[in-house]
Amino acid sequence: MKRIAAVGLGLAALILGGCYTVPETGRQAFILPIFDDAQMGAQAFRDVKAREKISADPQANARVRRVGERIARAVGADLPGANWEFVVFDAPGTVNAFALPGGKVGVYTGLLQFTATDDELAVVMGHEIGHATARHGAQRMTEAVGASLLGIGLSEWLGDARNRDLWLAAYGVGAAGMILKYSRDHEGEADEIGLIYAARAGYDPRAGITFWQRMMEKNKDGRKLPVLLSTHPADANRIQHLQSLMPRVMPVYEQHRKDD
Ligand SMILES: [Zn+2]
Image 1 (spheres, helix red, strand yellow):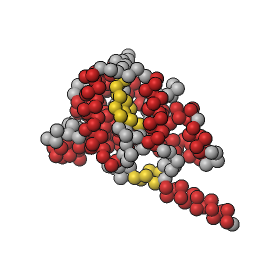
Image 2 (cartoon, helix red, strand yellow):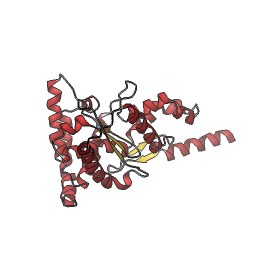
Image 3 (cartoon, protein in one colour):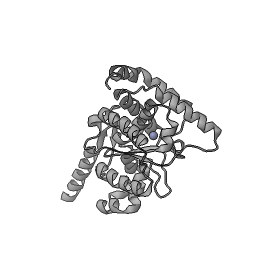
Image 4 (cartoon, protein in one colour):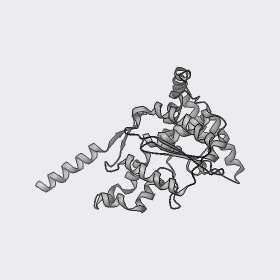
């Protein structure tokens, strides 16, 4: 009887501890309270930096830091314990970016070439950072491993390099050949959160529409698809959703555009 009570208490603690309120949207999500996101993010980011070629181009680095630091200020308390780091990876053919919990952001030079303005770069970085503040990766990990994890040593599980790769893939970073697609719901939510961050940082959120329209064009030519498209489908639904968010985000932009 005692043991049953203890298990019941444990489960209750797990469920209560696992309720996460997504910033900016207020959605309640269940996340197993076992993921030390910031610590995992920092470790995974070290792995990526060791694997990829880091750009020393002063202009590219200055641009990413300029935009990134303004967005980081706009994120504020949405990412507790963030230790922000912005790194440019030298890969002109790679139109991609990612953000890991803990405030670790990677931008590929291919994306810098593809984004016509800082406004466009800001909405893409805001979107990726939105995945991190919403803890979408941890939610996906919860879905994938929640049940099976209960029976085994958790620290052991997270310490395993293969599981670290899976975790990395859950944040859209291709690791060990894996790229997990975000669900449509998570994509939509990251679009919403990202536009809010961009607007609050003083960047024009309408750039989200032009950026994804141009991505859609890329989609059509079909020959050389940007990496970003493999994890972020660009279609009419996405554009329509972005347009529907404008009444909410344009006033935020108008309020913050003179901040800099
Ligand atoms: Zn996304």
